[in-house]
Image 1 (cartoon, rainbow, N blue to C red):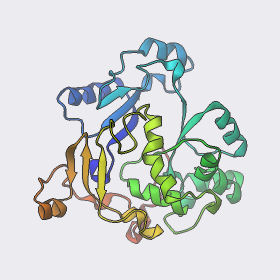
Image 2: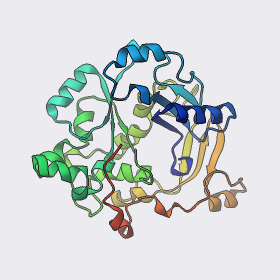
Image 3: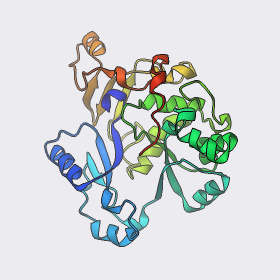
Length: 285
């Protein structure tokens, strides 16, 4: 993840997964910060009493791992994931409830082969294009919206590109009225995501008193062409003031150590034409 410019993630874990990450945490070897909840509460009809029993035992309130359930559950914001179908009435209700949504552009990118294509069959293409991951609608209702990946190999910058362009892997545009601008898309990874993981006082922006988490990019995110956002490469990622990833050529040119991921990144989906036969991956999560 640091090689993709990511320093903090949110996820739900099975107990054995929690044990593995907790072991890494005790060794100070967590590659990213992780906010988590337990799978115990997923699809649980008695979620509130279950959460009450879990308070204080999900992993502490450390800098690298913290359980979403370790503090006052009653004061938590309400969180909704995926954003597969949100119309205007839903957005109005979400605004009243103060819901923070985690939305996945991956549901748009596969086009007719994926979720938005299935919704086109069920509800018609115009409705599908307007309700699947409607980031513009959510933001216009003053709702904090965060970026969801939830698919191995789906590059974070491809998600940014889809949020800005609403294009699938064939370059078809789905619901241009739901596009957002680049700064808003950036906030879904930074300021607004910090609220989602309940650490807005420590994450999400570079300012005194917060963790020194940041990434240096090879290209200028604010000026590259819309269709080239997905091709932006991080060359340096820092977490808590510590270098956790360097791109080899960048590191060599500045005399920095080569740190972190050193594998072949070509399997990441980046919106390249040669990836067209991989565009069918969409659902799940």
